[in-house]
Every structure is written in C-alpha cells, then in structure tokens.
Length: 432
Image (cartoon, rainbow, N blue to C red):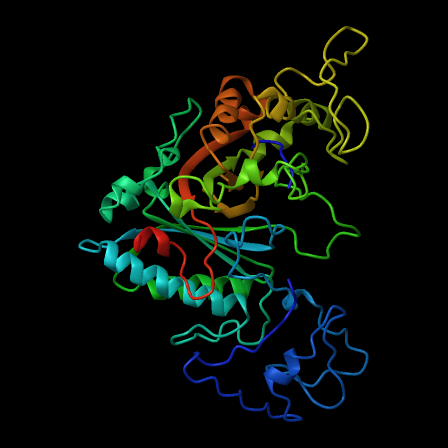
C-alpha cells in the first residue's frame, strides 16, 4: 500500500429514457414534482418547507434538518480524461470485471461499450437508465457518481485487436508475497463505479450489469467504502482500516508534472490511448487481529508515521518532508529502514509515482473470527512498469507492513481517455 496521497453542480431529474423525456408526475402532497424539487438544490442544500413534501418523503415536521447538498454533486462524463481518476475519494464503490461471452468479438464489444457509455452519461447526470430503470436511485441526485471503463490484456485477443494492445499492458510480474486468487483477478473488461451515496452506486452497478446482456458475463465483483463527505471538521487525508492516514504523498493535479506521471500524452502511442491511464487493482487483505495486537509505537515504526496526524517520525506535520537521515540517541534511524513510508517514497524509487484512489472493504467475519477486510487498492499511472512495479518489488523485499497484509487479487487495465460528445469510451480502439 504505497504511501502516496491523494463541476458544475447540476441535478437534473431521473426522468425516462432520452426518446421520451416527459416530465415526472407531481407527488401527492403539495404537487411538487421531483424535477422542481431537485431544481432547488444548491450549495447550501435543499430545504423541505410547509408547501409540501419531497417526492418519496412524508411532509417534514417543523424544525427538521434540511437535506444536505451531498446528492447535488456532479462529475462530468465527457472530457479529456475519463471520470473517476482525479476526483476526490467517494463514499461507496463497486469494482467489477467482465469476460466477453463465448462467440462475442469486436462487434459485440463495440455495441456493449456504446450501451455502457450512454448509461454512464445519463446516470452521472442524475437521470434514469436508458432502459428499464429500476428506480433504486429515483429520489437521489447524481451524488458525484463516476463510472470508468478499462480493457484487460485478454480483451485484445478476444476481439482480434492484438496489434493495438499496448506493451505497458503486459501482465504484472509475480511478487513473492502474492497469494492471488485467479478467479478474482484480471478480466477482459473492467468497470469502476464510485458515488457518495450507496443506493446511487448500487443503481449504477445494476444498470451496468443489465446492459452487459448476453455480450459479457461478470468475472468478479468487489464492494468498497470510504469516509462519507462532511464527517470531518475539515478536509483531510482518508484513514484505512488500520487507522492510518493513507495517501499522504499522493501526487496532486496542481503538480507541474502530474499529467506526465498519470496520463499518456495526446500524441502518444497507441493513439487510441491518448489522454488515458493505466489502473493497477489489488485486493489487499489486512490481517487486522495481528495488527491490532501491536502497540501504538510498534504500529508507527512499521509505517514510519505518527498514527494520530500522519506526520513522519522524524518530526513536523503530515506534509513535512521525511528526514531519512535523522537518528535517535542510540544512532538508530528514527524512520526505520523497513518502514513502509520510507520504502515507497518516489525519491527512493527513481521518481516512480502513482495516483492512489482506493476503497476499504469488509466482506464479513470468518468461522475463526477473523475479518475479511482490507483495501481495494487502485492506482493510476502513465506507465505501470515505471510506476507500480518498481515500488511493489521494493516492498516485496523488505516492507515491515508485509507481515500484516496479504495481496489476494490483482488486475491491470488500460483506461482510454474520455469520450468526446457523440462518442463512446473506447470508440477509437474498436472502430479505428
């Protein structure tokens, strides 16, 4: 788990499909339609007054807390890059990989990506799915929903596009600490869904699955979560299930070399990957019972940072540069040589950088009482062979954290740039 940190708000109604954009009927009490209701949502939230009730809600009693503006957040589907990469962490997430069905090829894949893109565009705008919407998210706004699509190594052989497969998509090397479940790794197609509302995220997952139809089947699916927006007094780096601030040294879009590190250039090769990125996905189980037996001091020695505020053990605040040479009175390094934060520093790895955008997960408690919980690690980079691989190799050789985690699934996906208006994601590959 490398130690690198990581719109316009408009809330259209979830109306019917584009072919029949009729207004929704008014609600019973007060006759306020959802279109009119959500149209009043703004930066300060949405109030329920004495004039009537929100669609799906009883009339608000006097003094009731108004709805917040969380649901009004909106990410854009069309753009230079796909959504779900540079946006902040979302409260709920679903990762799902598909394999093309037997007999399905390039034609079926193109039709599928066309359907998925149309659905993603509508759902991210807070509208209904194009076909047979389930109404799961009917009462919600977009809730910062993002849907991101990628292609796995096997996709290109299945579609006869081997010559278009990027060299950077070659399978990741084996790492000695891996205990990978092949059934929950890789895949022809990968979809990342994130939102700040669990029902909105599930609604998107269900729509994407239904759109797959007979063209593709689910290979694996994982669910994750992060802290909900607004639960801290100020914006701060997220904590993982070990209680550590996780993502302190993430590259930031304001960095001069951010695009160079995270995205492929518009003029690069292959051309269909212009403005795209590569996503490494790892399911990392945290051995929480073992971790929680450690003292606070021992946990901080493993990570190399204070647990309370994320500051390096060498002193300062969370953003203070780590002093790798600082020693204690006995001459030992204050930040141990095996500390996770020391090993993952970009300046200790030839400048290797990746944008981490993970979700925590919890899949229940086993018969032995141990939680199946940890991190759905997702990192973005322009070149995984220079980003993820060298850092993971170094972690493999001597990271003190390795004793308390287990890599159980893995995938690498090519994520093309964003779709222009009138295009679908991957069109330049599938129709080029």
